[in-house]
Length: 260
Image (cartoon, rainbow, N blue to C red):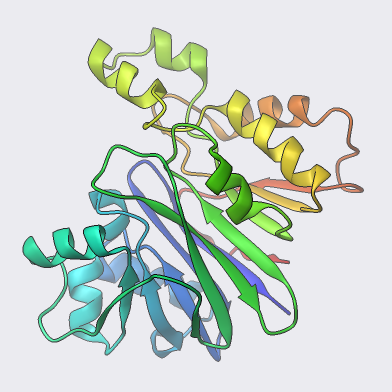
């Protein structure tokens, strides 16, 4: 039975565990080692179960705890070359850690992991598709300003997609952020709005996805209820809890997991 544990999901820290207590992988490590360890323990996942860390990009809310994690446990780090080069040059990976560029399908912890490019304002950014040994699949797809053909290809047909719903357009426009930051967030290399997330969720469901987990919500420009209502409205031609199951990833886990 395949499971995803959205341990942390917000503009301030992101990390998801895919697998079970016998083994799995982390997508990102954007919180302190202490917080990550506590979250895994709460989910009854031993730290030793982490058999690989896959980094989406180099922003701090995705790599904050990476150096300490790689110091504490002998775990390999995977990512795109440009991202890894930046992390290594800035000393964000503990010396001696096994670091691997992801160029195709990677097999670890009994799963196949494939990256796909996402448009974001960093040296390079990606999402990940994970195919499990029992024929199930999920994708983690956040930090993208728009949905590209490669994003469509990377996520289509997945049983579950953790999909960004970062901001409510009205809240962003009326909020306290400086104009240039608002412009950056709403750009094609920024973040995905609730409306765009809903439109993409509809396309995913049409292509066989049955579980949508909304993630990476801004704590200043969104709320879980707003995101959920907006996305559900975009899915009006489908029947909730029959055609699809919709949930919102918590800012910090209380032990939640989703079976896919």
